[in-house]
Amino acid sequence: MIVVTGATGNIGRALTQELVEVGQQVTAVSRHTAAVPDGARHVVADLAEPAGLRPALAGAKALFLLLSGDLHATGAGPADIIGEAAANGVRRVVLLSTLGVATRPFGPTRIAMRALEDSLRESGLDWTVLRPGGFASNALWWAESVRAQRVVAAPFGDVGVPIIDPADIAAVAAACLLDDRHTHGVYELTGPKVITPRQQTEAIAAALGSPVRFHELTRDEAKAAMTRSMPAELADDTLDILGSPSPAELRVSPDVQRVLGRAPRPFTEWATRNVTAFR
Image 1 (cartoon, rainbow, N blue to C red):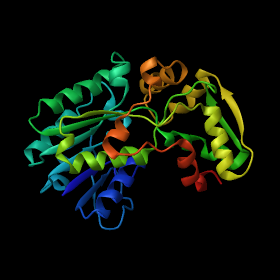
Image 2: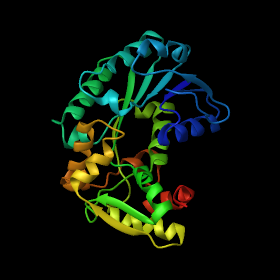
Image 3: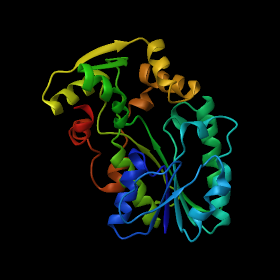
């Protein structure tokens, strides 16, 4: 059995579906009651209370660990989740980390994630670390304004990074959970090319078959919107990357191709697949 945390989100749901489709027994964990893909067992648990994961971990051989924003913060104790996994007989953990651990290692959230990576390495378990950059699904922040006003409001309109489709992260995670060849691998996951918010807006408009206007926000305006759903430190870290990406953050990684044997999906494909969110 494989346990998937964050199982109702953009990555976890796709991962759960992929594992079920190849015949794996899956326990889908989320903080609240929610629908999960057919064939998966659902367990409600709060990762902030690692002992509450024990019913989900019983009999599991592998764990996909995805933390919510509050568990990335300094002072949180996500390493206890790894301890619970080991104590309950889990043999393999695939951790969703962040590219910022390598590119901006001194931010508070990056320091906390690096410590979690280190705890996993020292756990005695088989492990794989996934370090994605920006997600294509972050464009869903714009869905309401696109539906209501046919406008995308975002900062840094002409500054891009190679954002990745969460379905590709899920596919890589599935491969790492199922194939011993990826043990002790650290994979940087990006999309196939750099794309700016203005270009994303154009892709959404093309998928809709309807014009969408781009409105550029100031950094302060963007932070005010982001902190409604994430810690201020994480918002600042994200805006630092979006506004002034380093050469390492602009690099297109070969790791999706290396693991899956195919190129990562472009943003245009993600927009077409998710167009109903913007209608």
